[in-house]
Image (cartoon, rainbow over all chains, first blue to last red; front, top):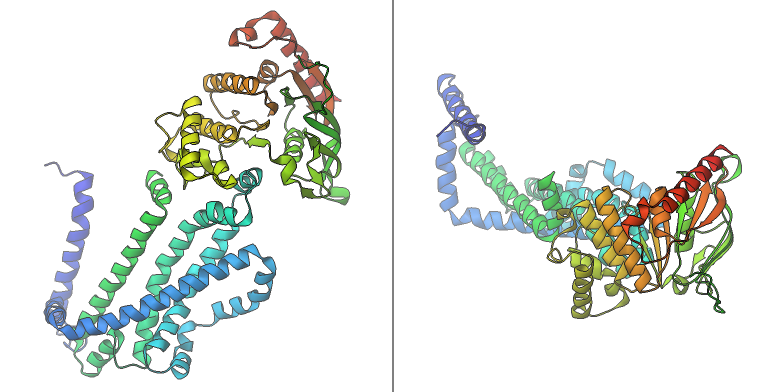
Length: 259
Length: 269
């Protein structure tokens, strides 16, 4: 088999990862780094293996996913509806603008303790934090997407005597969908961050809580293992949105592939 | 053939039409005091260089651009009531644009059926009709393709099918085949001419191609820029149906030469 460019495209990332892991392991062993600070990748792999077999992990993972997905759903609904209303009715945008700008500038993470105060230590506060973080990517993309209807396409609908509802269903919504979905890809990651931060600050369940607990127990390999699990969960959610895009906006996926 | 004694009002009646964009010193007169009338089944072209207001004139007729002065009537109904477009007057009108303007989220057949969907026709009826009309414009076998999978010529065929699917009485064409190669353009023009003649569709074509205007039209309306206005209306006397051979005749060449002279003079004035 010839060593084609294609082969190296597949092989190089794998080789790079292996070199990184071997280098990491060698560094920890030779430099005598404390295992409390930086465990070897082998130790993390062992911890991860034990954790995955532990039903406790899946209980906590379910909690975090529930919080993130609920927050995400709220963010997508609110962001899309508000984005559409502001794009369609300029007075709504004028009135909402100061609040939007303010909310955008406030570091939402800093509001997290406040949300715990308002909504308690249960799931609700984490859902609100997740929603707060996930809102803007969807909202700002929806606002731009609903504003960017091509005037020429709009002329077509005018000539066809389309009413407002028909315009929305046949032009504005499908036109906005790919851009809104791009916002959702960012949002879903933000909602995971929101849920985890909420669990850090105040909670007794969820993967964020688990990470804090392992930190207090100085069980660093387990802490790393939780981070790996969190990454995998985030990746799954991200890929899910990708599937959703391929299903809802196949024309966009097709055109992206051909360009 | 356009001089039949006819007691019905003109199919399209353009009176004192002026369109000014902007205000004050920045104001640009896109078209000034245009008068035109078309009988049913007439095919006229608006011919002129860019900036002569031909597209603006067409867009006012279509109800897409409100006139500053004057008005347009289609089958006796005014298109404009102040700055408000009349849905009733523009109902029998179909328009084709420079770009195909197909929606990428729909298949070719769904795009073609879109005007019928908007009128509320059932899915099975409108799809059947879309397939029928796709076949007549040479899109058979492409009904389930996405617009992005079609060539430019095929896309304009689909756009033509969408314009014809409602059996319009008035067809407004804004250089629809301008971006296509000469051969595709000839083929589509011939098909267009045949459809318009068969259904007695009243047609206004905007073009900057002298030969195209002379070949397709009963009358060619010559426009000039700065100030944008109609400078002349030239009768094209050739009998129908016309074939591509007509373009090689001396009579045709003479008319093309005459139109060219008029365009240059209008430009210099």
